[in-house]
Image: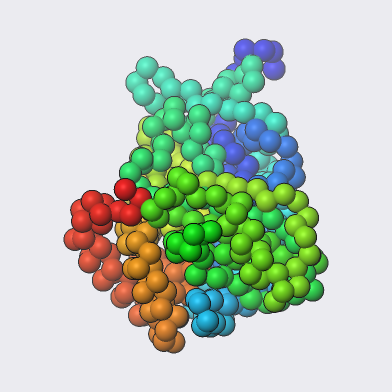
Length: 411
C-alpha cells in the first residue's frame, strides 16, 4: 500500500499478548479478517509471574493451544507464618485439575503463532492508535503511515496507556492497583508440582504487606520468584519493591537452594479497574479492561476468556457486540472482582490482614475457599461453598464500601 492509504478488516486488535491473540485466533478461525498490531517484537518478554491457573489451562484448551514446554502444576502451597497448607487443585466440571508454569515469552509466542496460522495478520514492532470519528465512534486505527478501518477495534494493550486514554478506558483513580517484581533463579526444585505462595510478607520495618511472595517452578532448571503488593497499604508510595524482593529471597533461599538471580528483578503495574471497557466500535479485554484478580494479581485466564468472548459476540452480531460484551463480562466477573477490590481496603490495615490470614489457612474449609480465590476458580457461576461465600461477601462489603474507603489505610 502507498503511504497514507487505508485497508479494512473485520477486526483490528491492538496488542498481541494472551488476550489479543485469543481474540484473533477465535475470530480468524471463524473466517473473519483480522489484523493485530504489537508495538514490540515476536518472542518479546512480558514481566509476569508466569503461572497458569487451571482456569487458564482450560481457556488454552478451548483455543487448542497447549504448549509442550509448560510445566504441570498440581496445586498450591500456602504459607502463613508458621502454618503451611499444601492443596491440590480441585476437580470440577469446568476446569482441569492442574495448572502450569510457562514463561510469557514462550506462551505469548505460541499464541501469536496460532493466530497467524488461523489467518490473522500480525504487524510486529508497530504501535497503533484508535481513530475516533466526529460521532465518538472508533472506526479503526492509525499504525505507522497507514489507516486500518475495522468494524470492531479490540484494545488488548495491557496496563492502560495512550490507546486506553483516547477512548476513556483508564484505570479508576480511587480503586486499588498492584505492583509486583520478579526474577528467575536456578533451583534443584524446579520440577516441584506446586506453586508456593507466602501470604505473610513484611517490609523492612516489619509492617505487614497486603500481597504475597511466590516461587513458581518452571521445570527448566529455574523458578520464577517474586513479590507483589496492593496499593491499599499504609505507606504504599514509600514501599521499596527491590528491598521487599531481597527480603523474601533471603527468607526462601535455603529451603529452595536458590542460586543468584539470573536477571535483574523487573517490576510491573497490575491494573484492577477500568472506567470503561466498551464503546461504539470498540471493546477492551484482559488487563486493559481491569480484569485482574485483586487477591493474587492474576489475569492471564481472564484475558484469554474475555478475548474469546469478544470474538464470539462479534461473530454473532457485530453491531451489538460491544454492549453485549460489557454486559456478559460484567455478569461473569464483576461481583468477584468488585469484592476483591473492596476486600483489599480491609487488608490494607495490618491488624486486619494478620487476623484474616490466620482465618484463611486456619481450617480446611477456609483453606479450600482461599485456594479457589487464589486459583481464579470463583465467579458468578461458582457452585458450592466458595460461590455462597462470594455472594455473601459481595453483599456485606457493598454495604460497608463507604466506610472502607473513608478509613483506607493508605490515607
